[in-house]
Amino acid sequence: MNDLAIKIVLVDDEVLFRKGISFLLQREENIEVLFEASNGEELISNLNSNKIKPDIIIMDLKMPVLNGVEATKVIRKFFPDIKIIALTSYDTKSFVTNMIQVGAVAYLVKNTTPKDLINTINEVAQKGFFYNETTLKTIQDTILSSKSSKVNLDSGFLSPREIEILQLICNQKTTAEIAEELFLSPRTVEGHRNNLLLKTESRNIAGLVVYAIQNEIAVLTL
Image 1 (cartoon, one colour):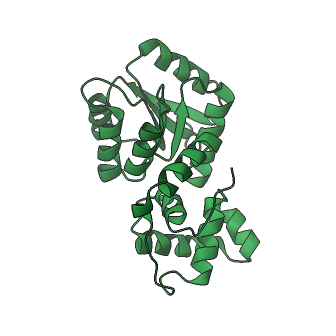
Image 2: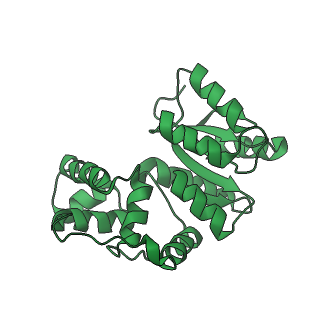
């Protein structure tokens, strides 16, 4: 086992599709498929029994026994360090928004290209989340169309530096890139990021992005 490889788990009830994705990913030198599952219940059972945990789970939405949305909720609660990439046939706004809200850090439809899938995996492994143009537009449209989603902030709630870092996070910059741009150490950037998570009560970086759009702190570049 390559300790440096991105460890992946595939969850999809369509066996042929799942095996195809597995074959594709195993050809990548920096990606390792730990195991596959046909539904959310099988996934959670395997996670509990396997000592080695994945970095990323690629999750279908509509599956028997336990679907992708419910499985993602369980993963976020009991395995918060594992990143979820939704890979599904459904691309409606409600599906995208729901998966992002429950904790998915990327969203892809099944007609995506192999190149896009591999790029998304690498981006998520490096940055913690990755939203392509379609997903970003859906997040913006959904949040901005909902007047009740806006939260009024006290002026001192976030420091100018925290706002600056949040804006760079929304531009999908890595910790190292933010540190270089602001002449800070990566550790300092991580500290600010952790404070942002605590202050905004966000569960992950994806939550910070949604929070920033809700409060008009950042406008994402499509």
